[in-house]
Amino acid sequence: LRCTGAAAARLRTLPSTPNGAPDTPTLEAMLEMAPSAVAVGRVQAELLPQLKQLLPSRSGVVLQLVQASAAHGVGGGAVLDALAQAVGATPSQEPTQKGEGEREGERKVKRKLTAHKQQPPPQQRFDGGELARRILGVGARSVGTADEPAVGVMGSRMVQALLGLPLAETGRLLRSLCSMQPTELLALARDSLGSRALEVAMAARDTEGIALPLLDAVCTGAGKLARSRSSTYVLQAAFEAAAVEQKGTLLE
Image 1 (tube, rainbow, N blue to C red):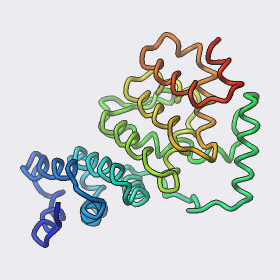
Image 2 (image 1 turned 45 degrees about the vertical axis):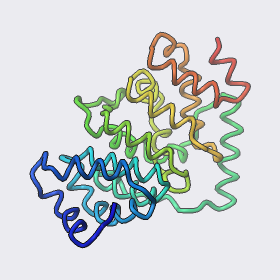
Image 3 (image 1 turned 180 degrees about the vertical axis):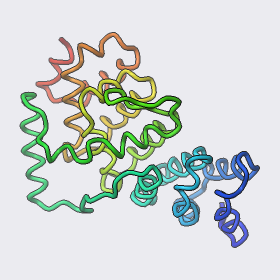
Image 4 (image 1 turned 60 degrees about the vertical axis):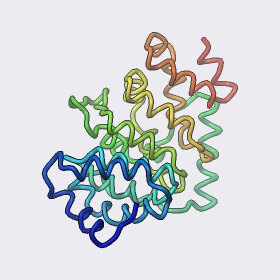
Protein backbone atom coordinates (compact mmCIF):
# COMPACT_ATOMS: atom_id res chain seq x y z
CA LEU A 1 0.00 0.00 0.00
CA ARG A 2 1.88 3.04 -1.27
CA CYS A 3 0.58 6.59 -1.52
CA THR A 4 2.48 7.75 -4.56
CA GLY A 5 1.52 11.08 -6.09
CA ALA A 6 -0.95 9.43 -8.47
CA ALA A 7 -2.44 7.22 -5.75
CA ALA A 8 -2.81 10.16 -3.38
CA ALA A 9 -4.57 12.14 -6.10
CA ARG A 10 -7.04 9.28 -6.62
CA LEU A 11 -7.75 9.15 -2.89
CA ARG A 12 -8.41 12.89 -2.80
CA THR A 13 -10.97 12.62 -5.62
CA LEU A 14 -12.72 9.56 -4.17
CA PRO A 15 -15.73 11.48 -2.75
CA SER A 16 -16.52 12.89 -6.20
CA THR A 17 -16.28 9.59 -8.09
CA PRO A 18 -19.54 7.77 -8.92
CA ASN A 19 -20.88 5.43 -6.26
CA GLY A 20 -19.78 1.86 -6.94
CA ALA A 21 -16.71 2.96 -8.90
CA PRO A 22 -13.89 0.37 -9.16
CA ASP A 23 -11.70 2.40 -6.77
CA THR A 24 -14.00 1.65 -3.82
CA PRO A 25 -13.60 -2.16 -3.48
CA THR A 26 -9.93 -1.86 -4.44
CA LEU A 27 -9.27 0.62 -1.68
CA GLU A 28 -11.21 -1.47 0.85
CA ALA A 29 -9.07 -4.50 -0.05
CA MET A 30 -5.87 -2.44 0.16
CA LEU A 31 -6.78 -1.21 3.64
CA GLU A 32 -7.67 -4.72 4.79
CA MET A 33 -4.23 -5.95 3.70
CA ALA A 34 -2.28 -2.86 4.74
CA PRO A 35 1.25 -4.06 5.63
CA SER A 36 2.18 -1.47 8.25
CA ALA A 37 1.12 1.41 10.45
CA VAL A 38 3.06 3.74 8.16
CA ALA A 39 0.96 2.66 5.18
CA VAL A 40 -2.28 3.17 7.08
CA GLY A 41 -1.07 6.56 8.28
CA ARG A 42 -0.50 7.68 4.71
CA VAL A 43 -4.06 6.76 3.74
CA GLN A 44 -5.37 8.49 6.87
CA ALA A 45 -3.59 11.68 5.82
CA GLU A 46 -5.53 11.68 2.55
CA LEU A 47 -8.92 10.39 3.68
CA LEU A 48 -9.54 11.87 7.13
CA PRO A 49 -10.06 15.43 5.80
CA GLN A 50 -12.71 13.97 3.45
CA LEU A 51 -14.52 11.72 5.90
CA LYS A 52 -17.67 13.84 6.03
CA GLN A 53 -18.03 13.57 2.25
CA LEU A 54 -17.08 9.88 2.18
CA LEU A 55 -19.36 8.57 4.93
CA PRO A 56 -22.76 8.81 3.16
CA SER A 57 -21.74 6.88 0.04
CA ARG A 58 -18.47 5.17 0.98
CA SER A 59 -19.17 3.86 4.47
CA GLY A 60 -17.39 0.61 3.58
CA VAL A 61 -14.18 2.52 2.92
CA VAL A 62 -14.56 4.43 6.19
CA LEU A 63 -15.13 1.16 8.08
CA GLN A 64 -12.01 -0.40 6.57
CA LEU A 65 -10.01 2.70 7.46
CA VAL A 66 -11.22 2.51 11.07
CA GLN A 67 -10.50 -1.22 11.28
CA ALA A 68 -7.05 -0.86 9.70
CA SER A 69 -6.24 1.96 12.13
CA ALA A 70 -7.28 -0.26 15.05
CA ALA A 71 -5.42 -3.29 13.73
CA HIS A 72 -2.17 -1.34 13.45
CA GLY A 73 -2.79 0.88 16.48
CA VAL A 74 -2.22 4.10 14.58
CA GLY A 75 -4.00 7.46 14.63
CA GLY A 76 -6.99 6.38 16.68
CA GLY A 77 -7.59 9.82 18.14
CA ALA A 78 -7.44 11.51 14.76
CA VAL A 79 -9.77 8.92 13.23
CA LEU A 80 -12.31 9.35 16.03
CA ASP A 81 -12.15 13.16 15.79
CA ALA A 82 -12.72 13.04 12.02
CA LEU A 83 -15.54 10.53 12.39
CA ALA A 84 -17.18 12.61 15.12
CA GLN A 85 -17.11 15.61 12.83
CA ALA A 86 -18.48 13.53 9.95
CA VAL A 87 -21.52 12.37 11.95
CA GLY A 88 -22.16 15.85 13.32
CA ALA A 89 -21.31 15.22 16.96
CA THR A 90 -20.47 18.10 19.27
CA PRO A 91 -16.71 18.83 19.29
CA SER A 92 -14.93 17.25 22.22
CA GLN A 93 -14.10 19.40 25.23
CA GLU A 94 -12.32 16.55 26.97
CA PRO A 95 -8.70 17.23 27.98
CA THR A 96 -6.13 14.86 26.51
CA GLN A 97 -4.70 14.06 29.91
CA LYS A 98 -6.32 13.91 33.33
CA GLY A 99 -4.86 15.51 36.41
CA GLU A 100 -4.47 13.59 39.64
CA GLY A 101 -7.52 15.32 41.10
CA GLU A 102 -9.68 14.14 38.23
CA ARG A 103 -8.39 10.60 38.50
CA GLU A 104 -9.05 10.56 42.24
CA GLY A 105 -12.58 11.82 41.55
CA GLU A 106 -13.17 8.91 39.19
CA ARG A 107 -11.78 6.48 41.75
CA LYS A 108 -14.31 7.81 44.29
CA VAL A 109 -17.12 7.34 41.77
CA LYS A 110 -15.91 3.79 41.15
CA ARG A 111 -16.00 2.96 44.85
CA LYS A 112 -19.52 4.32 45.14
CA LEU A 113 -20.81 2.49 42.10
CA THR A 114 -19.22 -0.76 43.16
CA ALA A 115 -21.53 -0.67 46.15
CA HIS A 116 -24.33 -0.66 43.55
CA LYS A 117 -26.41 1.94 45.39
CA GLN A 118 -26.56 5.01 43.18
CA GLN A 119 -26.42 6.31 39.63
CA PRO A 120 -23.34 8.18 38.43
CA PRO A 121 -23.32 11.91 39.23
CA PRO A 122 -24.23 14.45 36.51
CA GLN A 123 -20.62 15.15 35.52
CA GLN A 124 -20.25 11.49 34.59
CA ARG A 125 -22.99 11.85 31.97
CA PHE A 126 -20.39 13.34 29.59
CA ASP A 127 -22.23 14.10 26.30
CA GLY A 128 -25.37 12.13 27.12
CA GLY A 129 -24.40 9.50 24.54
CA GLU A 130 -24.51 11.80 21.52
CA LEU A 131 -21.25 10.66 19.91
CA ALA A 132 -21.86 6.94 20.47
CA ARG A 133 -25.47 7.24 19.30
CA ARG A 134 -24.48 8.97 16.07
CA ILE A 135 -21.69 6.53 15.19
CA LEU A 136 -23.80 3.48 16.05
CA GLY A 137 -26.49 4.83 13.72
CA VAL A 138 -24.25 4.83 10.62
CA GLY A 139 -25.99 2.64 8.05
CA ALA A 140 -29.05 1.98 10.25
CA ARG A 141 -32.20 1.02 8.37
CA SER A 142 -34.56 2.67 10.83
CA VAL A 143 -34.77 5.82 12.91
CA GLY A 144 -34.13 5.35 16.59
CA THR A 145 -36.30 6.53 19.46
CA ALA A 146 -35.51 8.12 22.81
CA ASP A 147 -35.29 4.68 24.43
CA GLU A 148 -34.07 2.56 21.50
CA PRO A 149 -31.11 3.95 19.52
CA ALA A 150 -30.84 3.01 15.86
CA VAL A 151 -27.90 0.71 15.13
CA GLY A 152 -26.42 -0.07 11.73
CA VAL A 153 -24.02 -2.83 10.73
CA MET A 154 -21.36 -0.29 9.75
CA GLY A 155 -21.88 1.79 12.87
CA SER A 156 -21.63 -1.18 15.22
CA ARG A 157 -18.44 -2.40 13.57
CA MET A 158 -16.89 1.08 13.71
CA VAL A 159 -17.60 1.36 17.42
CA GLN A 160 -16.17 -2.11 18.05
CA ALA A 161 -12.98 -1.28 16.15
CA LEU A 162 -12.52 2.10 17.84
CA LEU A 163 -13.00 0.63 21.32
CA GLY A 164 -10.16 -1.77 20.56
CA LEU A 165 -7.75 1.18 20.43
CA PRO A 166 -6.00 2.58 23.53
CA LEU A 167 -8.41 4.54 25.73
CA ALA A 168 -5.97 7.44 25.76
CA GLU A 169 -7.02 7.97 22.13
CA THR A 170 -10.64 6.83 22.03
CA GLY A 171 -11.79 7.08 25.64
CA ARG A 172 -14.14 9.84 24.51
CA LEU A 173 -16.23 7.23 22.68
CA LEU A 174 -16.40 4.89 25.67
CA ARG A 175 -17.40 7.80 27.91
CA SER A 176 -20.13 8.73 25.46
CA LEU A 177 -21.47 5.18 25.21
CA CYS A 178 -21.52 4.79 28.98
CA SER A 179 -23.28 8.12 29.48
CA MET A 180 -26.37 6.94 27.58
CA GLN A 181 -29.51 6.44 29.63
CA PRO A 182 -29.91 2.98 31.23
CA THR A 183 -32.99 2.31 29.09
CA GLU A 184 -30.92 2.94 25.95
CA LEU A 185 -28.12 0.68 27.14
CA LEU A 186 -30.56 -2.15 27.86
CA ALA A 187 -32.09 -1.70 24.40
CA LEU A 188 -28.62 -1.97 22.87
CA ALA A 189 -27.98 -5.11 24.92
CA ARG A 190 -31.08 -6.71 23.38
CA ASP A 191 -30.11 -5.68 19.85
CA SER A 192 -28.03 -8.12 17.79
CA LEU A 193 -25.71 -5.33 16.60
CA GLY A 194 -25.76 -3.11 19.66
CA SER A 195 -24.94 -6.00 21.96
CA ARG A 196 -21.65 -6.60 20.15
CA ALA A 197 -20.59 -3.02 20.77
CA LEU A 198 -21.42 -3.36 24.47
CA GLU A 199 -19.42 -6.59 24.74
CA VAL A 200 -16.33 -4.83 23.40
CA ALA A 201 -16.95 -1.84 25.66
CA MET A 202 -16.98 -3.99 28.79
CA ALA A 203 -13.86 -5.85 27.65
CA ALA A 204 -11.93 -2.62 27.02
CA ARG A 205 -8.75 -2.03 29.03
CA ASP A 206 -10.53 0.44 31.28
CA THR A 207 -8.37 1.35 34.25
CA GLU A 208 -10.32 4.54 35.03
CA GLY A 209 -13.75 3.07 35.72
CA ILE A 210 -15.26 4.70 32.62
CA ALA A 211 -17.46 1.68 31.88
CA LEU A 212 -18.92 1.43 35.38
CA PRO A 213 -22.23 3.15 34.46
CA LEU A 214 -22.67 0.60 31.64
CA LEU A 215 -21.88 -2.29 33.95
CA ASP A 216 -24.23 -0.87 36.56
CA ALA A 217 -27.07 -0.60 34.02
CA VAL A 218 -26.59 -4.19 32.84
CA CYS A 219 -26.41 -5.57 36.38
CA THR A 220 -29.51 -3.65 37.44
CA GLY A 221 -31.44 -4.74 34.35
CA ALA A 222 -30.17 -8.33 34.23
CA GLY A 223 -33.64 -9.71 34.87
CA LYS A 224 -35.00 -7.90 31.81
CA LEU A 225 -32.17 -9.21 29.63
CA ALA A 226 -32.28 -12.87 30.63
CA ARG A 227 -34.70 -13.93 27.89
CA SER A 228 -32.90 -12.20 25.03
CA ARG A 229 -30.44 -14.26 22.99
CA SER A 230 -28.32 -11.23 22.10
CA SER A 231 -28.19 -10.17 25.74
CA THR A 232 -26.67 -13.50 26.77
CA TYR A 233 -23.24 -12.43 25.56
CA VAL A 234 -23.59 -9.01 27.16
CA LEU A 235 -24.45 -10.62 30.49
CA GLN A 236 -21.44 -12.91 30.18
CA ALA A 237 -19.16 -9.96 29.46
CA ALA A 238 -20.68 -8.09 32.41
CA PHE A 239 -20.11 -11.05 34.72
CA GLU A 240 -16.44 -11.21 33.73
CA ALA A 241 -15.99 -7.48 34.32
CA ALA A 242 -18.14 -7.15 37.45
CA ALA A 243 -16.93 -6.72 41.00
CA VAL A 244 -17.65 -9.56 43.41
CA GLU A 245 -20.63 -7.66 44.88
CA GLN A 246 -22.22 -7.36 41.43
CA LYS A 247 -21.74 -10.94 40.30
CA GLY A 248 -24.43 -12.02 42.74
CA THR A 249 -26.90 -9.60 41.13
CA LEU A 250 -26.23 -11.15 37.73
CA LEU A 251 -26.75 -14.67 39.04
CA GLU A 252 -30.07 -13.96 40.75
